[in-house]
Length: 182
Length: 199
Image 1 (cartoon, each protein chain N blue to C red):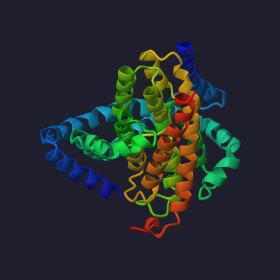
Image 2 (tube, rainbow over the protein chains, first blue to last red; image 1 turned 60 degrees about the vertical axis):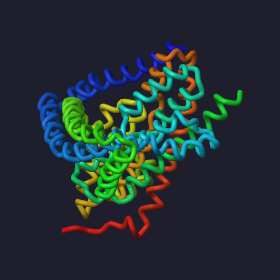
Image 3 (cartoon, each protein chain N blue to C red; image 1 turned 60 degrees about the horizontal axis):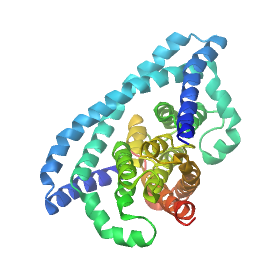
Image 4 (cartoon, rainbow over the protein chains, first blue to last red; image 1 turned 120 degrees about the horizontal axis):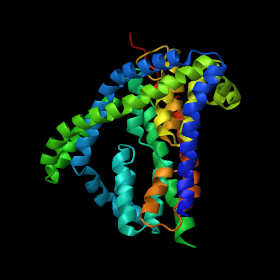
């Protein structure tokens, strides 16, 4: 079964390589000066990062402080017992709460949960499903709005967080049915 | 919204840090995170520049427009504010396709390109347009078909059937994407989210 996991990885690697080679090849067929266009695009990328960086910095520092403060653990402690009754085990709660803020931190949490409770546990499967169905909303917002210097983000963040919440609820519901009551 | 969230994060960090005795960690995290943001940015720069280079070739060859034309029926419904033949559509398609395939590194530059194209249609450059918010909702709700990283973590921890989470993730991510798109379409009519122009 691990073979399928790595064949999924193989598939995405093949697609990636097909794009890396296929796009320049397509350009040549369409008589595009591929090197010149590539360099032009790459230059845009460099300038773009200068625009995105201040947004990224602001977000990463605020999120870093928030994580260091232990606020997530305090929140988990208070709302954990209620969510436990609804089917979200307490150990998964910090991952669900931190998910909109940090991809690397929640990836680490998933690895830790899978290690502690075992790869075959309900907790590991639920945590994996949550990771697969939600995104780091604040990071995406900082990068994309930073790229075009948007300051008024309007309803983008509430909608993104709502989508994350629905993703977690749906993950709990489906995992409870698939992995818990066989 | 960003100002509010930012301030709320900072103030609550200090409050919680004082409450549970983690204030030294909070202090240290300021410098650490600032350093981390540079590392993230540097890591992102190379891959971003590389994919935007490829994107430029795809654009110049007309590939992006071909893709956009194929998905036009869906896109015009999701992004009624963007003209069907606008280059923004091509960039949106490339971003969503890369996201579905789990090519996060490729998806971000395409997404940034889509944002720039949508900005060119935006009447109030400092405020997000409806099209941008819809695009962000799709991106923040995750549209990945196979959660490769999560499967790898489960497999590493000895799961006998780590790919079992493909089906459950697909179900949950479909729910979250529908929820995200529905939410933007409803919220964009609310008066507190109305576009206010800035000179």
